[in-house]
Length: 496
Image 1 (cartoon, rainbow, N blue to C red):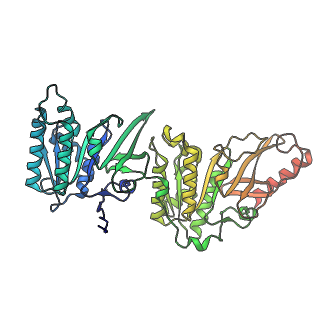
Image 2 (tube, rainbow, N blue to C red; image 1 turned 90 degrees about the horizontal axis):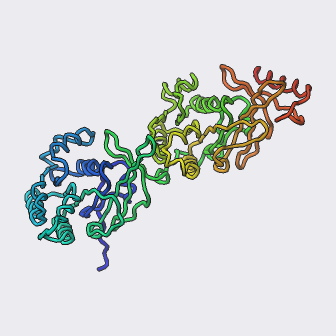
Image 3 (cartoon, rainbow, N blue to C red; image 1 turned 60 degrees about the vertical axis):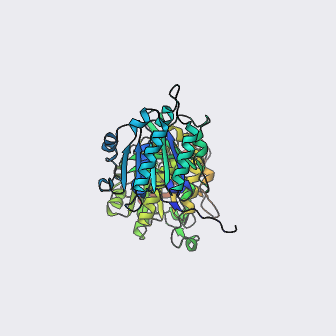
């Protein structure tokens, strides 16, 4: 035998699930959907069933000792994927509760076999299979052993060319279990409550014949059903013509800043704008997006703090309302990094955007569920690599506590991740606070090393002249001459 048998993979109809399965669900496979109560097992099974079943390839859904079919359908039809017209045509529900209550596994199997022979289904679902397991645990049960029952059921479904799903409530995956051994695939759903967040994760513990994405992957249940969020690395995207634009410079939209950056920010770079509250980070970000719109480019802003993005600036409000800028503004309390990346990528693809702003990293971290904050630095690294690698130019803002006497770039130790850094800060001169700006780094490019005074008015940021080189300027009390020069720098910024 020299020819290999190829597996036909079925699309599950669950966003993101096919990616972590390794391309879809193997046809004719014998699968277990397991997890604790309330984690979404039945919803996942119904979502898959309504996606794959047709009148020519119908599905049978057996209900056992769980909720009655009518009660189950009352709740499941609230989801968008539920199709009432399919019930009785491509989807058939059969109640096995009476047979299961007797603990007679022979009777249960005969009912299943009879229904399969009648409908000749392409898909079979048994919910909850855990009920069958418990019925076999009745004291002095004289009927078939569970292992033989499972093996016979699996062999029967395979011989009838049916893809089978067993849905069961299991609380751990470590105890020996014949179902785990016989199953071709095991999809395990998990959930945990952390403060005010419900974190749900899915794991493909086993899937014969194909490589799956290892690990736990977050998912969300909404009116559309389940949505799985694959890892960041599974979202490759390249902006059209990006390979030819690597040597181009992106204008920042703030007069004088392009000059400080050696001609602008190289296209496709990631830029970190760090500074204390009120130092102009969001204003600089809005100018960056506005300049792109002026040049015919679209952008995306991901907002993660308590303010409404529309209250940030009238410029940003107009850009969003005109469709020049797409908005990602999720206020969900249990966000994961993979979900955020998916939201951003969808908006980038929708608008064919070339500029992205994340404002701010501080709010971003707080928007994540507590469990995801532990790996924030690592996840942020993956996000930066994914976005910059796709060809878009990224600007991120980061809140810094201004200590006046030292110079820091990021509270996350992530300055090395970005291609460029701009720092805004305050200095005290003659009992007054002045704003200053510096370009700290731009990889592979010459740039100014000057500290420049700047002001903020209704027109945005105005960059002035270079600060004087004077001892004690950053923390002590400068001389009157230095104070005069600083005042001149501030006035020049206001005039420009």
